[in-house]
Length: 207
Picture 1 (spheres, rainbow, N blue to C red):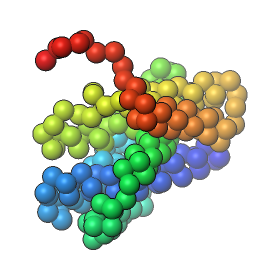
Picture 2: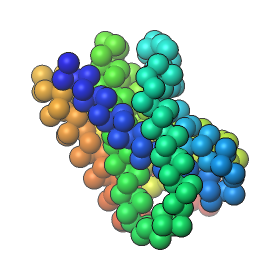
Picture 3: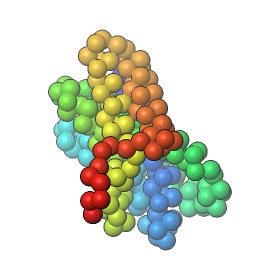
């Protein structure tokens, strides 16, 4: 029961955060209101839908629980109506919000996978899929290279957060403790990576 509550809370907060991010990306791309709502839904729930399909949790929560799509659409509409105010928000605040959403979804994805008794490695991957899947779909819709493939430690941060959750649960920690540790790990690494420009190794001069 406690584990399910942790997953639900993390999922709902992450949904709102990523819906705002998706709507903002759509506005920057010049999409109309429908496009904004589609992107807000996709970014907020795409990763969770992919996770649920992969672990056999069907129909996905995004389709079964009315709170998820409603929250995504409301957040997207609010972003559309208040875009001028959101544009005035400092970049670091938006990065912090995005890092929080990433961490929440990585935690929720790993916890949900553990509920279905899949292997530790797969649970870690499901955490990353939940955190990054919606963003990948967003970038495909907007015809650009997915940010997770070239951002400063993004998917790697999600993998780390999910790994901490899984390790904590295997060691017998309470769900809330393991989730908190995973959130802190993912969030801290993502913020530090942005702040100091950390990134994974690349081939110098490669096109």
